[in-house]
Image (cartoon, rainbow, N blue to C red; front, side):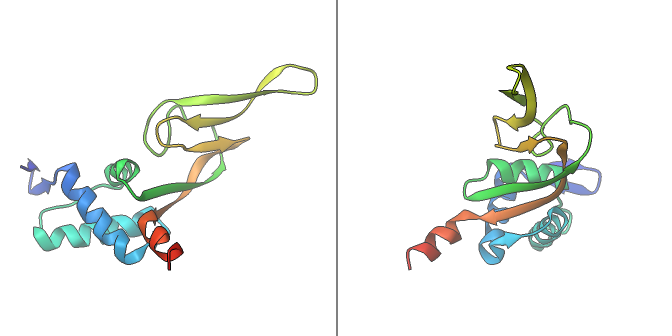
Length: 140
């Protein structure tokens, strides 16, 4: 079943996850979120021209899809309140400095594994990798 929003049709997460895996099997590594959105939307439109998925929704589905790894290259910026990958709460990573005082040196998302250290906390680039292909290559 699909939801409708105006003239657009919104496919179920399972459908998008399936299409995402099909795209990633062919590409193995996609170096940008915008490229992945383009490829997935192109494949979705083959089923129905009205289907499309937003970048944020596709990223959230990718995080939950087996064999898809989402890595983030970061840049300096203000600490986000939520994980920029999956929108989950971030946990502070602490350590003791030379004077024994506990300081925050980074942040980690316990849901998707996003890590940010120092002042590099904002996403600059998302890279998507199909992990199943790496396993097949390593067994040859």
